[in-house]
Image 1 (cartoon, rainbow, N blue to C red):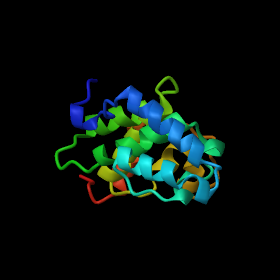
Image 2 (cartoon, helix red, strand yellow; image 1 turned 120 degrees about the vertical axis):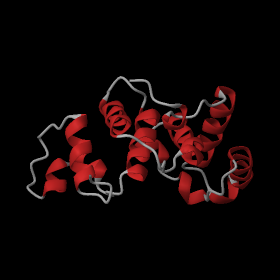
Image 3 (cartoon, rainbow, N blue to C red; image 1 turned 180 degrees about the vertical axis):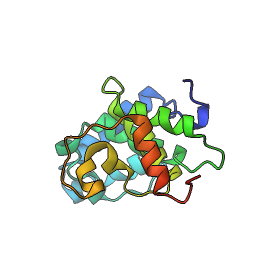
Image 4 (cartoon, rainbow, N blue to C red; image 1 turned 120 degrees about the horizontal axis):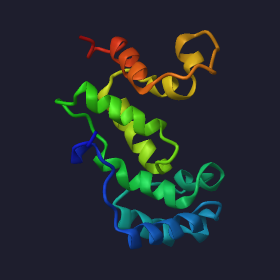
Length: 158
């Protein structure tokens, strides 16, 4: 299924992403007083208001390129009033697709969290045992099942 533009990760200037990822790498693990100019440059270029602490530990969790893409996608993540169940299922399928870049998967997961008022939808993907309270995290749900369950437990239920 083709998703409308509002449900797609933003197209980013790759030169900007590379420059911001390099700045993030300098700030991540750097010393606060030695990276103040890099932090100011990052915030100016990315139009953010991040602090030194926001950069600490990025490398341990993901690469700087992915982190920058997530930061830059933030303004494009919002709730739509006319989202369809088919679109939700398509986004859920993309979150589950290992071939899709991590930053895009994160974008769609964030869009699902914003558009289905069930704050625990990520548990259905990654920790279903936590969601259902039975500890069985080995179950694998389909995209359709995830959306059906999340909608049933939200205020958008039919």
